[in-house]
Length: 74
Image (cartoon, rainbow, N blue to C red; front, side, top):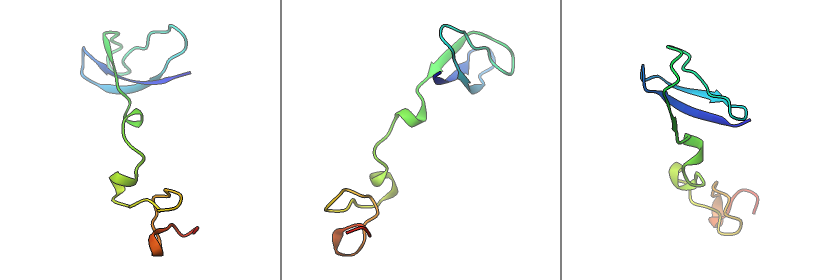
């Protein structure tokens, strides 16, 4: 059952809804059904290392760099 993000065109509210099959969600604020499905935040982005400023390990690409250019595991 996919989780989608929507914006209601009637009241402007952003919300998430679990959608089964061909079911059409309604806005929880105004019950409007004129909705725009938005791109989910979790579906966009990188591996997190660049965003956090951490450099990956030279051996295994683990984002927590330790001494000697490697993560604490190496």
